[in-house]
Length: 162
Image 1 (cartoon, one colour):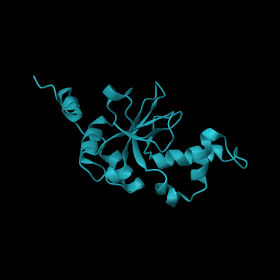
Image 2 (cartoon, helix red, strand yellow):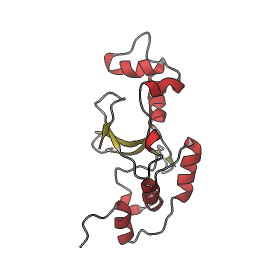
Image 3 (cartoon, one colour):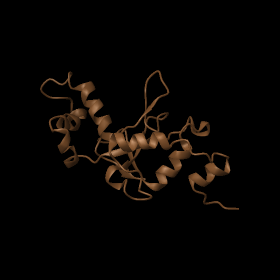
């Protein structure tokens, strides 16, 4: 018996062997102008629309409210959304817990990389509200890149290697 199966091998053993995510992956690559790692691509080709993983913590993008449409999402997309949601409430100075986000707001988006790395967000602990998982954008060139975890209670710029 083999105990060290990859996720793709496991899916194929369970009968999920027909790739359905090619179109979604191409859209993601074109919209975000990124390449995707081989390990991620192989898995996502089988995972997209896979009912077995419908309630998992893995993402194929940001879920739109009231629909089941999936939209590709990067960490910078999320940061911009948080800033857009809060910027009208910030008068001259935000609260101490939002200071880092406010400081980022003061920079042009092109300079964010000096403060925080960008990630392709690939999962979250949505039930527990503990954090999310991502692959650094600069690591997407690797066949099997490392995955990082961002704990919700930490500074937005603190991502730890899983």
